[in-house]
Length: 133
Image (cartoon, rainbow, N blue to C red):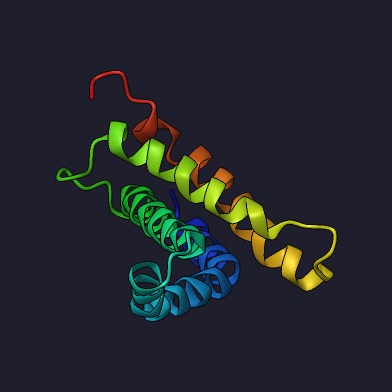
C-alpha cells in the first residue's frame, strides 16, 4: 500500500472513529457507577452498558490489530480467530445507535464506524481470512 493510501486510511479512521471512541471512553469512565448500580440496586440495566463498553473495547482492539497489519505488516500479531469475531462484536455494539427516533447526526455516529470497519476489514482481508493461521 502506498504512503498516500495509508494517509487516507488514517484520515478515514480518525474521521469515522473519533466520536465513537469518545463515547466509548465516556462509557469506560462511567463503568464504576454502572457496577455500583448493579451491586447496590436490584436492576439489570447496568449490564447493558457494561456489555456495550466491553464489546466496544473488544472491537477496538480487533480494529487496531487490523490497522497494525495494514500499516506495518508485523510478524507478531493477534490470531485472525480472535480478531474477526472482535470486529463483528464491535460492529454489533454500534447497531443499537441506529434508530429512526435519533436525529441524523446521531445515526451518522453509528453508520460511519460501521462503514469504516467494513472497509478496513476489506483492506485487511488477507490477514483476516488467511488459511495458514
